[in-house]
Structures are given as structure tokens and as C-alpha cells.
Image 1 (cartoon, rainbow, N blue to C red):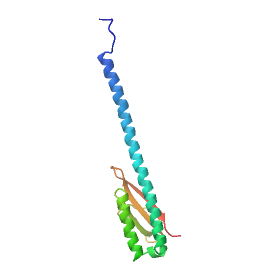
Image 2 (image 1 turned 90 degrees about the vertical axis):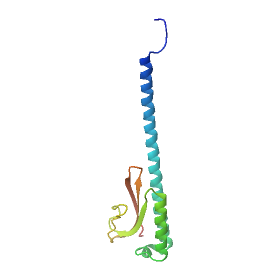
Image 3 (image 1 turned 45 degrees about the horizontal axis):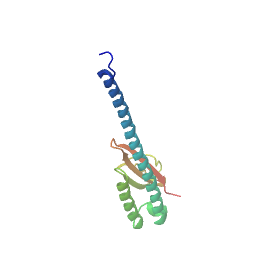
Image 4 (image 1 turned 60 degrees about the vertical axis):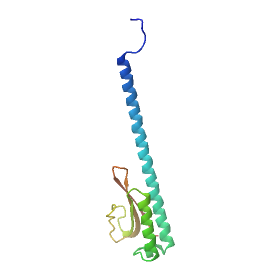
Length: 140
């Protein structure tokens, strides 16, 4: 019996455990890559939405018309907000005067009514729901 060659059951089990650990690690890396790609997609969409808003402001009366939107500016704002809700996960957007534009969150954008006219966009990142926000000053 000592002349037989091959692997013992213990060696096979250790090799299977090592392989399973390596495959699990690759799976975790793949999931992290997908999450990072989704985050980059949402960041890009937010940037494009802010540029879209800037163009809408310029083409529909400028910042003065958007300080209290009515008529064309109000229609553009409503359309832009629908696009934000469609293109970003749980997306929301607003235009307001704000001295501290980097604060706020969806549902409570923290517009203080002073300072420059800004556009703000908010969304939730991933299934865990980390909040993300971007803003752009619309006054020239």
C-alpha cells in the first residue's frame, strides 16, 4: 500500500478551502468594483444635471428669472427636477439663494435665502443609502 500515489482526503480538503477563500475574495472585489462603477455613474450624472441646469437658467431669462421662478423658468425647473428624479437613485434637486451652498440634504436643502443663486442636487448612494449632494453656483 505504500507504493500508491495520490492525494489524501486531508490534502484535498485543504486545497478546496484555499480555493474557496480565493474565489470569495474575487467575488468581494467584483462587488466592490460594481459599487464603484455605480458611484462614478451617479457622480457623472449629477455633474451633467448641474450643467443642464446651468444651460436652462441661461436660456430662460438668466439668474434673475430664477430667483422666484415663474412662467418659463418654473416650467424648466419642474422639468429639470423630473429628470433628476429619473436619472439619480432617489434623486432630488432645487434652485435657491444660499450663502452656504454646500450644506443641506434631500428634503431639507438648507436654503437660507441669502447669497448667490445655486442649484443643488441630492441622491442616495447604493442600497445602503449613503447620501450624496452636489451644488453649482448659477449667478455670474
